[in-house]
Image 1 (cartoon, rainbow, N blue to C red):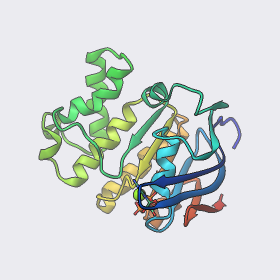
Image 2 (cartoon, helix red, strand yellow):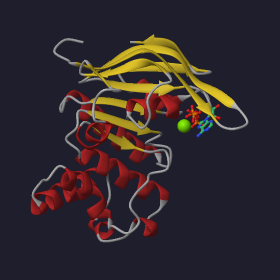
Image 3 (cartoon, rainbow, N blue to C red):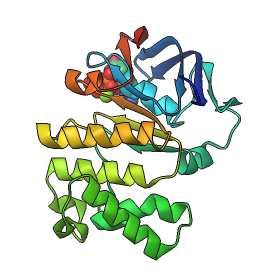
Length: 228
Ligand SMILES: Nc1ncnc2c1ncn2[C@@H]1O[C@H](COP(=O)(O)OP(=O)(O)OP(=O)(O)O)[C@@H](O)[C@H]1O
Ligand SMILES: [Mg+2]
């Protein structure tokens, strides 16, 4: 797509989980590219490798073979801690909020890592929380005091607080009702189209997938087709 930057290039990657008793080849020879300014959905059955693929894009581990290039640099050769801190933000399938930080402090966290002024970080965090549909009442609560859907929205606000150009989200609407699902999908689309991020979400929800610009389908560790 014109004017967009090819920010991630996936070159024939495979990934194998190894334990004492068995090995599982979770990713099999995937090749594709991701651009900024585009919202992607990754769909596929449970166990097809979606979360594994996302965690490789997030730099949590390196592929067993093949390469992932981030702005033309091999992920294996860059400082992956820095990459995770500055370039990519992630909404995990199981939220991973910090239990000892309040809702607002959770959202401020990536901005503090990026050394943003604390007062500005708080203001931005509160605006983001309102944008995902959380009310002021939630701001000073701890994650354990929120419902599943509220925690999910807090995790989304935290990922949106990062200035990184890549946003990854594993089932970001899994715990939301239809109304909140619509709000979140619209926000993610705006992040892609207006803030020019590469937004990559894993979803089981067809309605959510249909709203994205590109659908990637996984089956048994492989990428089946790319639909425009
Ligand atoms: N830590 C692990 N150790 C060993 N095998 C794993 C591990 N995590 C995942 N797997 C295996 O890798 C394959 C892909 O798993 P993955 O979690 O990527 O699937 P998924 O598409 O995200 O599924 P779901 O829709 O249920 O979240 C599965 O066969 C799974 O059992
Ligand atoms: Mg998964």
